Amino acid sequence: MTTVAFIGLGHMGNPMAANLVKSGHTVLGFDLLPDNLATAKANGVTIAASAVAAIADADVVITMLPAGKHVLSVYAEIAPHAKKGALLIDSSTIDVDSARKAHEIAKTHSLLSVDAPVSGGIGGAAAGTLTFMVGGAADAFAVAEPILKPMAGRIVHCGEPGAGQAAKICNNMILGISMIGVSEAFTLAEKLGLSHQALFDVASTSSGQCWSLTTYCPVPGPVPTSPANNSYKPGFAAALMLKDLKLSQEAARSVGAATPLGQHAEEIYAQFGAAGNEGSDFSGIINYLRDATREG
Ligand code: NAD
Image 1 (cartoon, helix red, strand yellow):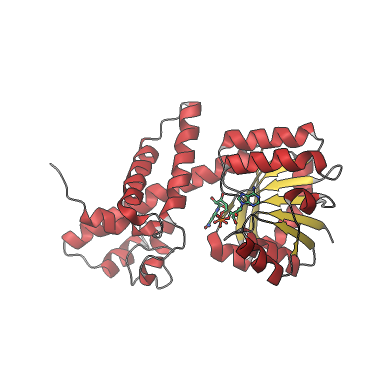
Image 2 (cartoon, helix red, strand yellow):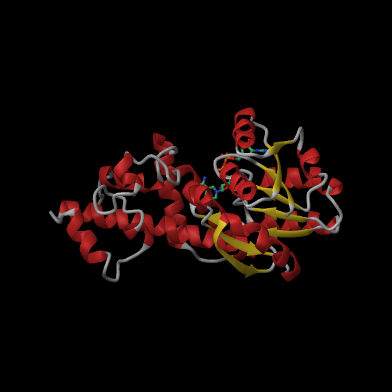
């Protein structure tokens, strides 16, 4: 079994680390928040006094941090002290540019590295069914894959360093756009006198079918497990959706890709957040669209 250091024990990191402990790995953890450390300790993680202390004897280091600046600062701190030949796995969702810089830091210190962001949310993290999208060289992926398994439902090697983050932001751009599309359809249906269930029964088995409709339906009723049935409690918070849409548009600008719907989705989620809904599930966008009035 492997000694794994886990840095960033928040909503996602803590359940992921718990699954590594359950699979028999020795897990050392570090976070800045005492409450998160207490949860980790209760889950069987050995708490370290600092990030450097956590990684000193680790064969694998996993980071699950808020954004690129946190990952780069932790990498700069730990890389000079990491065990020779150790593997660094960053599972945070960050911009492609920072992901590539993180790989460079690892390479400078002769460490293996992969970017391995996830899809599946807090539920998937707890159940050990996350989808990992991995970017990095084949030798690094070969070491990463068995470590990721206890936390994963699916592991996809997407390509070179940064390819995992690229896959993540492209997927979530589809998600943001499709949730707005499904929400617009329900809003129009309501105004046309068509019931939620009738639209669901038709679209879920027709060409309008998509995850935002069939798994995460933004109106209560047709999919009992969707956050719409629980006052739009997240789930996947609107603030995180906006973060990922921003990352997609930053990447689109940097490579000159035309993503007009992605850009519009970012604007709509920015307005939704500014109206006080950052903590709502992202499917709550339907309430914002329903309240909006059409001009022209
Ligand atoms: P979170 O804020 O709950 O956890 C981040 C943790 O990092 C916090 O506990 C914070 O204290 C810690 N941290 C920050 N700087 C640190 C440092 N220098 N050293 C040690 N710890 C530090 O966030 P989360 O919801 O767990 O998300 C983590 C990442 O996963 C984000 O990049 C997010 O976009 C991504 N993600 C989240 C979800 C989700 O549903 N929550 C789903 C997929 C991906």
